[in-house]
Length: 219
Image (cartoon, rainbow, N blue to C red; front, side):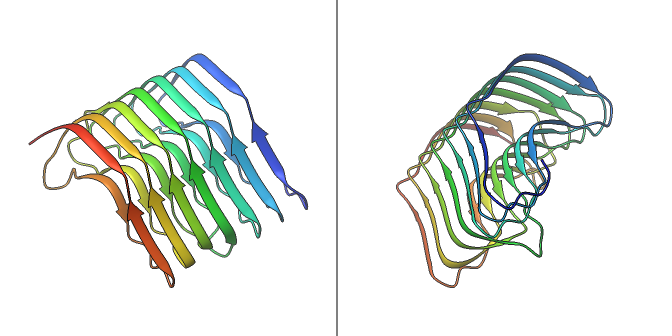
């Protein structure tokens, strides 16, 4: 998208049964790079039945916001299911906010998103369920999201279900998320993080009432 002085809504779109092959090219399903002065809403989108194969470094980006916004960003009630992704070194991102470093967003919300039945075949490609990085904000809420039946073959790259390293001025709340049935191999460089917050918060940081069950992590 381009620059917009109002609000941006990307909602209720369905992307299904796609076969994508590449070498170094990445696949972006929904990608916003426009500057939005008010709010960005990315809600209710369905991504299912995707097969993406990159022979070298191409990555997969499901919902990607790469824009500075002075208003709010909401990514809610989006679903990913039956995805078969492969890349030798490329990453796989389901929900990714990477607003410009100079930008700020007042309130960020990732809620009630679902990722289910996903296979990621890779050697060194990292995996991210929800990733918020590169921007300052007032409030961040990550709540009610579920990650179920996910498998990745990575052995030398990190795997994050929920990751934040943005800077919070008021509050960070990560609660009532469900992580179930994750299968992968671990070693000294290929670590697994269910929930990781490395961003400083000047106010309250709450990580509570999350459920992590049935991890099959082999060394």
